[in-house]
Length: 298
Image 1 (cartoon, one colour):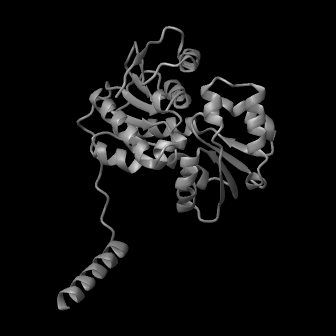
Image 2 (cartoon, rainbow, N blue to C red):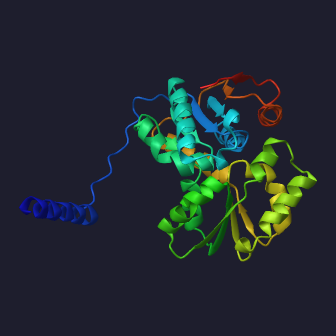
């Protein structure tokens, strides 16, 4: 009895100390890394190319390694356990490829496997996700009613709402699962009557009725940004997530002196778990016709 009481008191004391005197976060040390190492980026398919393209534009001297897990797409209807497994295998692969930073260019992987990826990386390299930088930026700007369209797995995690309201509890966040968009994009239905019908059906949902700002909570969705903006006209601001994520990566690399400014012939290498025609088409459109796609089953 006495031991039980003592343990309760100790537990409460530690909670009090943690709450009122939080430990200083250990400063991250990446001095073992070199600016010449590549940046690793991964997604379930073509969506992450929107982030990779923006990174390439903002950081033109960097070598990039991209892994598209096309064999397992879409991640949005997979279980958390499956998403953690896929993300962990890809992260290990990118670490083996000597990447100096890992960008999770997938909202579903961020929402379901960010903590596990960070634990696996164990602060060996910086990990940049696609939800927290966007949520933080939106929180500090003038937004009252924010809508998020994303996959089922991302919406079910509630991470956008939690992340935005962590910084600004007065913002109203409405999230809507839009599961048909990723398969339509992966099948190449861009600027197509099918996609127009799907977009109209989703965006006219009553959940999004009063929004002033829309976050495209899936890296595939910027491929449809023109059609989405066309639906709203100037009534709703559509957030460009890839640009925010690329800027976050640049800031972190600059902070740790890991920016590559002297690379006359930067390379971008693509690994896919299944080579698809649509990935080939979009990657060549973004990065030029001479790119190499390598099959890699993990």
